[in-house]
Length: 216
Image (cartoon, rainbow, N blue to C red; front, side, top):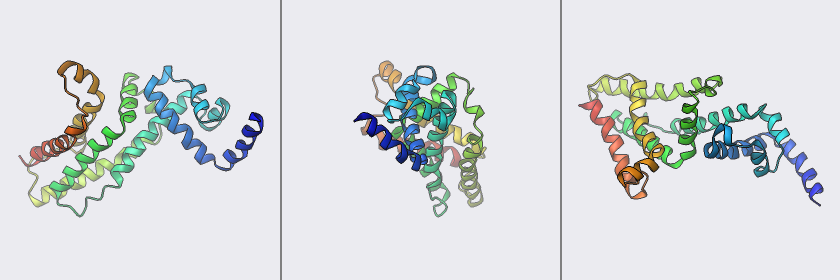
């Protein structure tokens, strides 16, 4: 009975290679975020996707390549969220505030993204530096920030000049810290940084921080 079920699934998966690949990546993101590159097991990822280790290697080439693909996936989801942000019709102050708040919302809603980035920093970006798509993927958000800044300078509402990458760092620092350090911060200060009750307050803080810097 089990053999017939497995054999029946194979043609379906062969007809849907993109779906299979996405299912593997969904589980891989979770497993690498939970256990790291060394601790995650490809056998476990295969078991959770009802596929085989051999098929995973067929799609991705190996464990390291799967890990890199998982990193690319979480970054691409973040960049997609930014790309969907339509702020060109907003005044520059509202536009940069909304971009900062979308970053906070995404980071809080996707802790696996934060964990994977933290893990890869432990590896000194050894693996993600091999990605051929990451750097081009990150360019649009910097372009979007630069466009907002130029509109703000032209309108006279932004008075402090800043490099778009530096502003991206400023926004990311606040948003990333809340999720990455939530457990140690709770232990040290008794405050839950991702308490839902403080979500709107923190959205206001990151928006005010950026706007105050640019307009001050």
